[in-house]
Length: 271
Image (cartoon, rainbow, N blue to C red; front, side, top):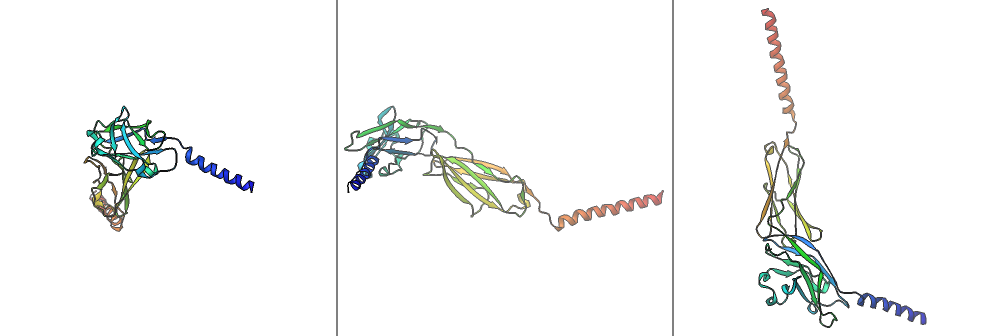
């Protein structure tokens, strides 16, 4: 029995330590690119002492690092500074310790740094700003051009897949990729690379013909907020060999040989 009691005490101690030993902290991407007029989604997670709380028990705030009273997001919209009203949204669930923030309609002065602040009633540190883990934004006046991958030389009549992709930091409103050739079977995929940077790609399958040789294929990226970028590649199509491509040159060679033979024969008779 004493051994069983000791085991129970040990298990309780482990559970107690795992629940209550966790300290305050936040993990925020330190720097990100942000396209002017578009949006940026800042990944953020945080931790606090004690058991997990429901969303309603946590008051979340995002503010400027230089002055925590300059609030860019919180549930009470009246306390948000005018320049950010209607442009910020919390995408994460606070109960899951996710403080991910979206800033929409990016302005060229939205550089930050911006920091997350948690207020939890009943905690010793009921108002805690994580000012050592903030995010700074680098303004992009224009978007990156998409990258278009393809084979250097295509074959007439052979289906070929083209890949177009572009990186962005607005996964809540990802860019749209469109092609200059209509194809209802084009597929699109948006995936997270790292540190809030995403890549959206589109795959297009075409069956080129001789008429496509030396023509342009365009891929256009349309970003949330209205800006666009475009990449063009020239297509080179190798003509597919068939019986006519073989017969015609052979006939031409034979015909030339016959004419040359007749010419030599007549020239010999003349001499």
